[in-house]
Image (cartoon, rainbow, N blue to C red; front, side):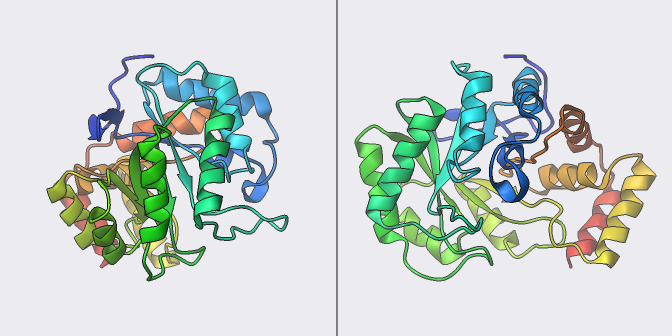
Length: 288
């Protein structure tokens, strides 16, 4: 792997050291995250460029495609470099209409773990995120049965570390009474700041927070404010949003996705932007 210095440095997930700037593979599947990519070779090139840039954290799921992104990762990168950590998630399936039906009973979770092992071509998964809630966001309720199933799989040697996705603060607290949690993956960005308190608490605990949809849910007014800052800095709105996230808290890990090598490089450059105090204050007003 390359030794490129990426924005934000590194973070440790349990005993896995990853770059804070990672890569999310979801967009490599076809439209609506279903089926193969239009450009198979291009998808492989993006994954190989991510590793060449020094990225050591790739986020995926057997549900993407389904199985498409996992198989692309295996084709592009297997045998995996020792420093590379592929993080996957379980808790939802795909139906023929492209929906995401929940699948969190013990039998379904065991099947999904097996599917991830097989499609990634590994004997054990470094980190598995348990996804809760639904497509609208986190939903209240106990996660005990589902998480205990993953704990059992960890004890069997099939999983090394556990994380959570699409969860409430109460579910995080419940999970931590059952097993060590090394990361939480939720929706969060400049315009959606509902997890501010959770991020700060996790930072105090040394637990990573992985935001998804770094540009999702902006109103036209908020988008205009972000674009104005980006134009002033000679950067893209995505780049500014990523740079702000890295500055927001040291426990934030980024997993922006893209189908393009050029866009991947652009995202890396954007995340490395130097934001002044005035820039930060102006951006901070977007989510208030």
